[in-house]
Image 1 (cartoon, rainbow, N blue to C red):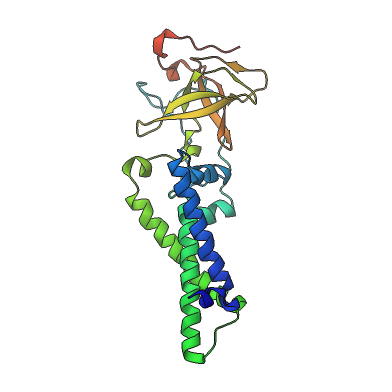
Image 2: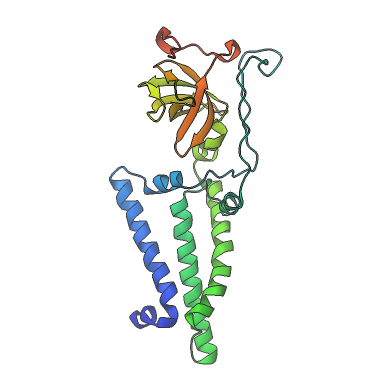
Length: 251
């Protein structure tokens, strides 16, 4: 077995299996320490629209007649989905944690490579060169990763499968609940998605001169990484009661 792993023809596949084991250990250790390496890595990736259907509309509760009028702030259009986002979405990134998909890919790539080399050795008496064997192993690993991602996305707990894409927070009303938000100094805010679930996000003013105090209600207009940019909610139709009677303060 050791000789099989150390064979030059199997080097890419041995490295793949080794990386898989290391990543799995990092994820387990992180979970034991109360951290989530997978979530941290997900935040570094570009936003992926898993449904190719952005929900950038603003919902208004309790207003007859539908959308808010022309006095409400204009929400900028969401950016076009790029090729990288399309590839990541096809691989189910955003529906399944990226480290889980990476573990699946590395495992299937490594096992497919070892199986291929063993098959070739059995028929022809020797393995393929590593650079040649990598190609069919990739062709096996990529669709296998997608299929595994689709399967995992169906069995992930309901609260995760119903979770909206963070890009769909654009256009939602959020309330500053802790701290004071300034440009480049975000504060914590909470908002409710279309499933009625509460999310806690970091928000900063979109304009350099604005400051949002605790209790201020704002509208999310854009996202940069894990930070959301917002403008003051000036639409009477969209103002929600603030807990504790706090005023919507902006300076």
